[in-house]
Structure formats: structure tokens, C-alpha cells
Amino acid sequence: MILTSAMLQGANANTSLLLLAYGLGSALSLGTLIFAGRGLVNRLKPSIPVTGWLRRGAGVAVLAGAAVISTGADNVLLANTSSQGVSSVEKGVLETVPKVVDYFVSKVKAESMDNAQGAMPSLSGAVQWINSPALTNESLKGKVVLVDFWTFDCINCKHTLPYVKDWAKKYEKDGLVVIGVHTPEYGFERIIDNVKDKVKEYGITYPVAIDNNYAIWRNFDNQYWPAHYIIDAKGQVRYTHFGEGSYDTQEKVIQQLLDEAKAQAKTASPAA
Image 1 (cartoon, rainbow, N blue to C red):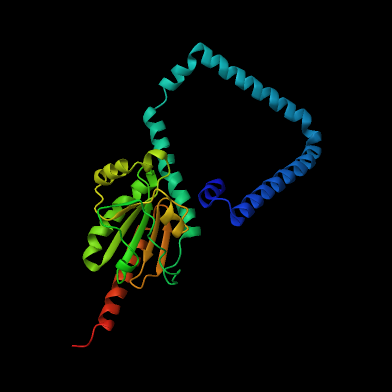
Image 2 (tube, rainbow, N blue to C red):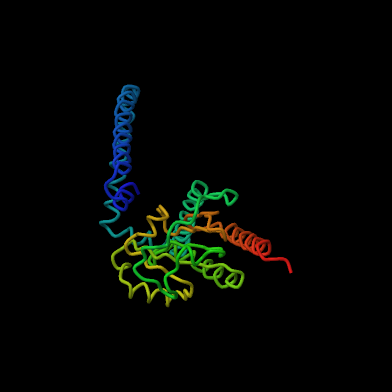
């Protein structure tokens, strides 16, 4: 992540300090392990005969495993193992691990909507727009905006898309504008025709900015796929979320900001 950030930001003082801190931290960790290891070895000297027997036992186990494989007995053992059980375990791991990671990311990175986080950064810099002419901060005044940073081959982005598409459809009449910012991670995701094909395949009908030069990504100082920025009708970023999850919370934020926008519009309109 540090090296990726350095690549995106280019050579500057912040990047240099970040890499220096990373190097010093690694050196300190290795030094601590070396000194701690020496002390540990001294304490374990009385148990060296025991560890010797353990090493011998492990060696015997490895040789036994090799013998089983060479005789083909492992095929018999695997044949008696339920493939369905193994598949279920694999599926459970694949489903659980991303959720656990996303949980901790959201706890660390998600911001409260109670505090404005500054004005919405610029949307300028896209090489092309899909489903819409180029949008600007000025043209979005008075609208609640959801900016979704994504890329078409990101599995986490694919998981969030059904929710984003549903919000775009459900709240469009109330004034919500959803903008997908497609910032590529791999070379084939930079090919505009590939992006257009995937936008059509995924059924995305809201505006999509093709951010091949990472211009909008840098404007937002973003670091994640997917990343959601929800902006109120005054142009202030009110909520951010990185990764999957918290869909109910995000929808409630959208609803509240739309209600605020309606109240502001009524206050601004002259009395009948």
C-alpha cells in the first residue's frame, strides 16, 4: 500500500518521509526480533535435548508423508474425503475473510456524517464521460451526490454495484446524482472500450467518469476501491465509506441529506 501510494503521488517530501518511516520501522522491528531471539535462545538451552527429539519426530513425519504420496495411498485417503465438505469450508473462508477485513477497514476509515469534511473536490480531469456530458461541481449545486470510485475487475466493487445502482434508481427523482469514477488498477482496465462494454454489461445507467490519469482520484486524495463519498446539497462531503458493507447506514445518510435538501429548498423559496 505504501509503495502504491508513493507511485501515485510521485516524488515529493511526503512520499520520501513515508518511505523513510517505513524503512526505519522495518529496521527497528528486525533489530528487536534479533535481540529478543538471543534472549529466547539462552532461556531455551536447557530444553535443547527435548527440541532435538521434536525435530527428529517432525523429520519422521515428513518422510512418512513422502512415502504415502509415493505409494499413491494419498489418493485413497482423499477419495474417502467429502469434496462437498472441503468445498463448503473453502466457500466459508472466501466469504468470511473479506467481510472481516471490510469490517475493520470500515471501523477505522468510515467517517461520521455529523461533521462536514470539507467542500467536494473537483471532478475535472476525466479523459471521457459515459452516460452523460462532463459534470462539474457547479452543475451539481443543490444536488445530493454519491461519488463511487470503482474499477470493473475489482470483486469488491462488483459486490457494491447492485446497491449503488438501486440507490441511483430509487432516489433519482428526489435529487440524488450518482457518479461512478472508474479509476483503473490494471492496464486492460484503461482501455476505454473495455470500460464501455462493462458499463453496459453491468447495467450502469448513471454517469461514469473515466479517470485513466488518476486526476479525480488525486483530487479526492482517495486510496481505495470501492470508495463512496456522499456530498450534501451545499457541496460539502458529509460521509465517506471504504470497502464493502454498511449499506443500510449509507442509504440512511442519502435519505437524510435528501430531506435536508428539500428543507433548504423550501426555506429558500419565496412565501406564496
